[in-house]
Length: 121
Image 1 (cartoon, rainbow, N blue to C red):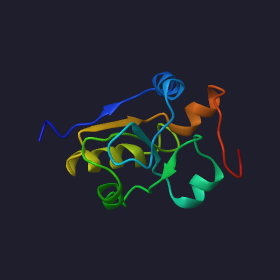
Image 2: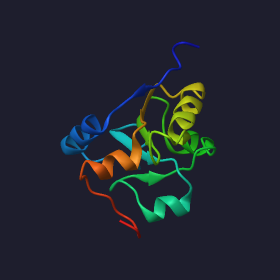
Image 3: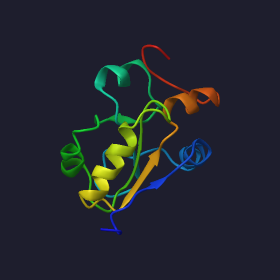
């Protein structure tokens, strides 16, 4: 089971990744996916541009959408929010091999002055 682990990524690392290339949330294998794991209403209010929404607890949607080798970055609201960590762990248990958790989430992203989109952005 040790092989089914996920890693963490900080805001600077994610920002650098996004400067190098945009997320590819539609290709099953290529690029990386950026996924907000909060509920749909929270996603609509605010999210990182280019991300999609698959709420924590609905990890079966990842199985349908992405190959197990796809690089996936998940995030939620803040370090106090456990949704991204739970989603990352669930994905690792489902056999996804390249999962990263941006644990600081939207709070950190916004405090660093990085762009947010949504109805409350």
